[in-house]
Length: 377
Figure 1 (spheres, rainbow, N blue to C red):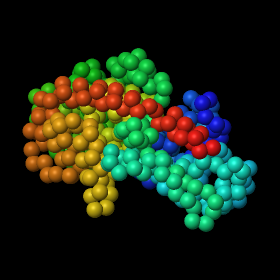
Figure 2: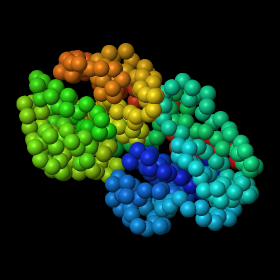
Figure 3: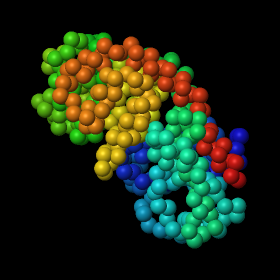
Figure 4: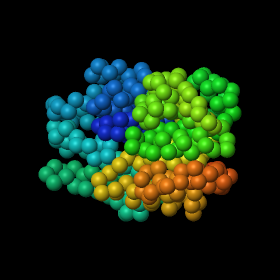
């Protein structure tokens, strides 16, 4: 262990169904498994947690899951003593900790390192705010802001030490067959689809159906349910599939996190949403577009453009499809937009691999975070 952290707590409130708990679960699991830290994960929504980790018991107030203590955070301010407080406390994305917990943090000696783990953004201002302190207005304790990011002036991206080696050993065909795909679907151009309900999925379906190559679109159960139901002509339950023109749509079961990584590795193109799957798509090193969580006054479009400015590297067809899919511009010709992307596909594949090398140079987020916490103790 290269840091002084022995115990750590993460507080997570689920807002984006799976993105918040997805990040916190990967974060806590990696800290425990790779750094020998005793991790406690406070979560307010165990049902969403169970969708990505089936062994979670939804009515258990306390449980041990893969070496991480999981506590059901029910929003009630209980009683906490200074000895209950770990070495490091992480609040995910500005959640409000129980006031009594903060009081106990301030009374602990030595005081814990208090970190606000912020959302991932490619905007330039992030670099200036990374590691910035914020003193509590009343108590003698300071909170520090920690930003994941895409440059060496941020915390980098979450990725496990073994991830790329596991991906290199992975064989997609048996995995896809285990999900029910036929030989023709396995041989087709495969697209994974994980998006929010307002995405223009019907327009993409039409473009793929009219296109010049077979496309297999793999959709987790519950995603784009209305459009998928319309395409299938039946309920979009796991295992359901239908074909029209050059497109086959297949509904997959909602798989645990490790299998979702394998799905991203197996596809030629990935459509991902939120933050957790966005990061995993980057570590898949495959071309992708990101469906960003909507914000008031279209602030998400600004964040999307900031990322595309870094990632797309001037590949106009990728920017066009990504902006159109997010409603940041009006796309009147989806078949043309998709064909332009296919024409640029070798460049997209090359860019995905170059991007991965660039991100690896920033180090892994967990090591960077624990090193920072250690420097404050």
